Length: 543
Image 1 (cartoon, rainbow, N blue to C red):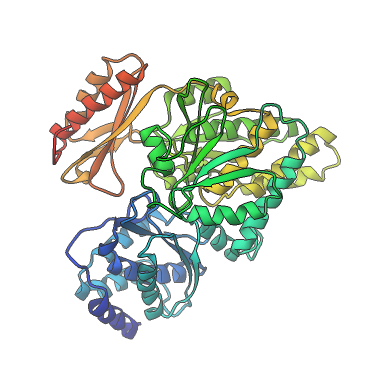
Image 2 (cartoon, one colour):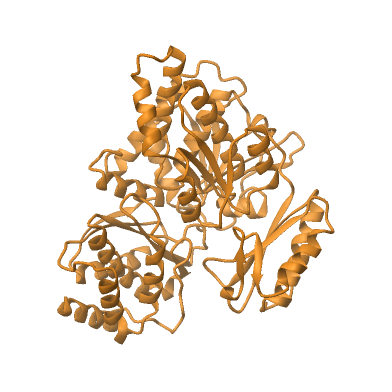
């Protein structure tokens, strides 16, 4: 071990030293920064991934992506053996390794080995992939060097969406029980389930299988082209922003559409047409359309969550199975969606801090846990108990034909859903199946409840860690006095609600506000931004 750690430090000093002493933090979605600052981070995450594999005695994964960030950024995150996000205690290890001086790198690694009681003699195995950013290959090679110096075996899957890598590592660690551990296996599993469910629907009502898809000029474009080949013409998809002309995530993609509440640049909205947007690594999706008056309508993660929960609730009820379902949201969830979930659908709803890891963990507390962030990132988790109950019901002699049919559909839906992480491709297919089953157009779906107008802004600050929150990020506890100012501003607006939280990836404070009309939502967001700037140490121009 000592010889390996010596090589680790030497190679790090020679080839992968930080360009400048910039502190970088492993946040909600791993590391994110300008690509020029990340070579040493990628190398060191190769080291950490090898240790994590030894600790778990299983294959782990590393995804190189900055998701919805601008093209000049990049990032990296580690993925657990079953496709989950990295265990929270190891996030601090990642941060300490990334920021350790070269001369202390081996000491830092040895500390982790001792603290976690890792048998260094055990083998390590890591799979990794990247999105389509121009510098991904260089950074991928830096990460690979980290694996090599640690003696880890590895497989480079090249270009993949983030959810595809999550899927593959879970397949590998379940010996194929979750599916075939290849990109082709991913397409086949989802397409087979989609075709089975689609062909069981005889009357489609107002549903239209045509969709205009903005792929954010990202990896989701080429992977969706492959998925289309497997769908037997059951969906009519026209791709926009497919990477042939345009920058990644620039004025397009799920984050742009969600935050700006407008269509991607160059995509002309036509009334009655269905549109959707992926983000750069295809783990988010939002839908949108224009009404007869050409007004833009967004159907975001909240709308997707309520649609999915409604559908699953009907199948569970029809099957007569004794499984409980819950829906998990964050503070970003529109207030109208929470009312619809709890008062109309009568489904338990939980609120957790922003970040997939929090939603995923809370969803595991239900037999069937639906979780979606408002940004369009989400999925459904079926517990081992629920999976067993559903599987047994299909062949149970004491059930009616209707109950067996509903249970069979639930079983197939489980194959359509990527349970490892939010997956734009899987979620697109799931939404299409539900709309087809209900016979709904976009307008029909949108009418379930009316979103309260809202606005998101951000304020650059000296140090985002100076802002601390509680109550699932809905209340500020530090700096002192800020929450009281927010409460006073909110009280001035009908149906007003606002909260602020530090970003997980950059030194900004994110502001969310909603009110009875868009003008008031905009005013509230602006006034809260001013208070954040004044009290929380804003930098740059005042809002």
